[in-house]
Length: 216
Ligand code: AMP
Image 1 (cartoon, rainbow, N blue to C red):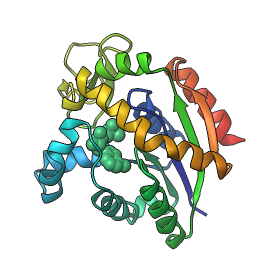
Image 2: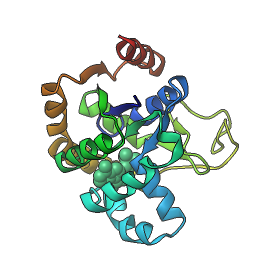
Image 3: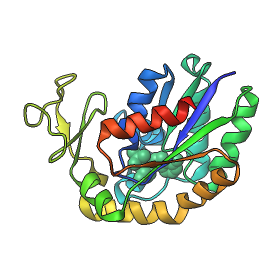
Image 4: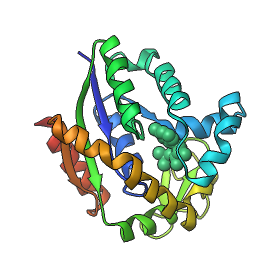
């Protein structure tokens, strides 16, 4: 049976960082809906053109576009053993669509770690975040700066501040999250799949807590 893990958490909580680590340690594909959208924007695809303004404003892309992009990604060969889903689902309609899709592939959502932190911490973290252009490696100007300013430690590419990581847009994204994604926390709690993780701890401790909870 494939293993599908949905990572939930507000913008800035460190979900992307943890998803990368989990995907390496558990040998599962890492599917980040935000990365997929940004890749489409960078490559100026039809989808990229449709969603650019939405991402820049910190709003959610319509469910139909998002679901079909994820469906496409889940059919790739690296997902036969499962995947870590990072940023998807974000609405109840997406969660329902995911259940239907996974059932088609003979799987289900196995666990839903929910990483949380107070809003003041989120704004500070997300608005200080810098991302590498080549592969999306994540830095923070205060908590995790690169060794050489402006350059990714891992692949040497330029690092930049995402348009939607500017402080006004971060606050908007947090509001959108509270409005549209919080219902999913209750949905997965009721289903007995939610694992609550304290995202205020340092990255390594959050990873330890996540791995311990998932290996139970
Ligand atoms: P992220 O990198 O997860 O913070 O996502 C960046 C942006 O991509 C979000 O602010 C949305 O505009 C869009 N996005 C990512 N995932 C989804 C999703 N599941 N549903 C709708 N929009 C999304």
